[in-house]
Amino acid sequence: MKTFSNETSERYALALFELASENLQVEEIDKNVSFLLDYCKNNLAFANFLKNPTYQLEIQSKIFLKISKIMKLNTTLSNFIQLIINKRRIYFLEKILKNFNNLSSKKKGKIDAIFISSKDLSEDERKKINQDISKAIKSNINFSYKTDKTLISGIKIQVGSLLIDTTVSNKLKRLKQSMLES
Image (cartoon, rainbow, N blue to C red; front, side):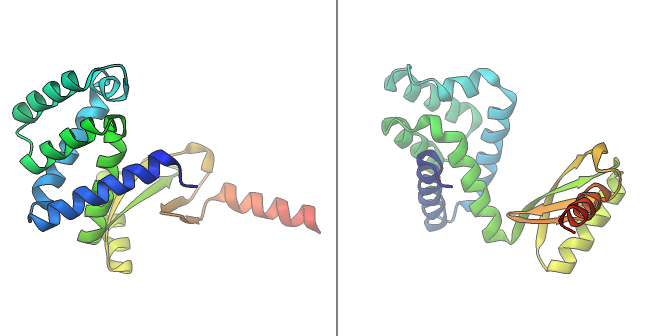
């Protein structure tokens, strides 16, 4: 279900992506966006600053100009952030940046997916799984790995709305459901 904030952030992200494409700056802006997202994730004060609507436009604008200079952000991205500050959409910045990353990844042929396993996987196992699945679907997959001991055994892979569930707990649920229906 689309909400106002999701729809708005998608539109702004698309506008930024198209602007970056026109100026042949997608790679550079993508790196800046990833850096800003990491900063938002690791700096609670900065994340709270973005979501606080009580700051005056001038203060937000000045702070982001300084941040842009310190982080050496691309001029296009810096100007874009100034625009969303002036439009009072700064609290959407994190969603806009995430949507921009998604657009950029899709253009590069990369797919984000979640891989949930019943046991911890070694780095070699993760690389092998990533290579095998990427090769099978002929696209580069960026997995985020999670461990869930309640699955008993097996794996879950979620790519967008597609879910592949080979866990024992899921098989037990289906067996229980079929027994109840009979």
